[in-house]
Length: 465
Image (cartoon, rainbow, N blue to C red):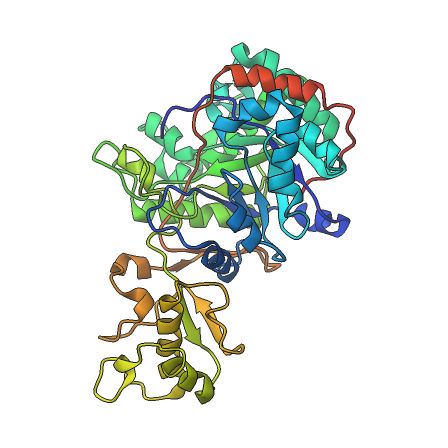
C-alpha cells in the first residue's frame, strides 16, 4: 500500500427515505470500486454485475457520470468522492462547490441513491439536500497508537486538535467514525506475535486467543481488536456514543516474495470469514450489541496500480467478463439473432464446437452472447424481449468457448460463493479476493476540513443510510 496520511477526506452519508433507515441499521457488507483497471466493465455492465452479485452498497473514488446514470432506479447505494485535485478549489469557493454538487449530486439524486459525498456542504444546503446529510471522515488505522491491548489504545496526540472536534461533531450528529482497518498489515508487522489464524477469522483454541489484561476480554480475531481499539481511543476523549464503520478492509491475493502470505487462499478465507462475521451480528468483545458494517477493498484487481505487486491484487474479482445467455425457450429470438441481428452463429451449426447440446436454449445463449459482445455490451443489447439475461458465470463447455469468454484465463472461472445474511441481505460471490485505500492528501487539508466541520454544527441531520 502506498503512503497514506492518517486523516482522509470527509465523506457525507445521506438517506433517501425513512423506511430505508430501519433497513440500513442492519449490518451490511459493501465494496469499494477503484478504476485503475485496464479493462473495466462498461457502466451498464458494472451495474448488471453488481445486481447479479446482489451487491447493494458501493464506494466510488470519483463521481463518474456514466456510472451514476447506470445506477439510477436501482437499489444500489453509492458513496461518491470529490477527487483530491478538486478539494481545495471546492472548499475555497461556494460557487465552485455549488456547481460540483449540481453536476454530481442534484442531477442524479434521488433516482440514484447517493449515500455519500466528499465536502461541499454549503452547496448541499443551497441545493436543499442538507437535511438528508451526515458527515464523517475515514481514517487510517495509524491514527491510533498502541492498539493492543485495545484498552490501552489512544489517538495520536499530534492529531488531537483535529480528532477531538471531529468526534464531538460525530457525537452531536449521530454519525459514525469511519476507519480503514487491515488485519493483513497487523499480521505482517507482527509476525510471530499475531497468529495467521487470528488475522483470518479462523477458529482458535483458547490458548491462542488474544486477551486484554486490563479488561480480560478475549479476542478471536484481529479486526474486532482493531475496532475496539477505536472505541477505547474515543472513550479516552470522553466520546462513548459514536459507532465504528469499517470503510476499508481486505487481503491481497498476490504479491512478491516479501509478502508470502498474500495468496488466493488467504484472501478468499479472509473475505469469506469477514462477511460471515458481519452477518453473524456478534459485535465485538467490548460491544457485542453493535456490529460494524464493512466495505471491502475492492471489487476488481486494479492492474494499473504502481508497485509493489500486492497493490494491484486486492480485488474480490479479477478478469471479470459478462455474457448474455438465454433462460427461456424462444426460437424467434434465436432466428432474429442469427438473421437480422447478424450474430456469428457459425459455431452452433452441425459439426461445430458449440452445436452440442442441440437445443434452442443452448444455441440461443451462444447467439445472444455473440450479439451482445458485437454490440459492445451496450445497455439493452441483452434482452431479446425478456428471454435473455446477463451472467458472470462462464457458459463455455468443453471446446465450445462463448464469444464473451475468449482469451479469458481459467483463473476467471474460479468462483466461491460467500456466506450471506439469513434475511437475504447482500450476497457476494468471490473469484479472488480484497481491500482499499485513498491516495495521499496534503496535511493542510485536515485543518481545512476542521473548519468545515465547525461551520456545519447548526445543520439538522437524520440517520444515514
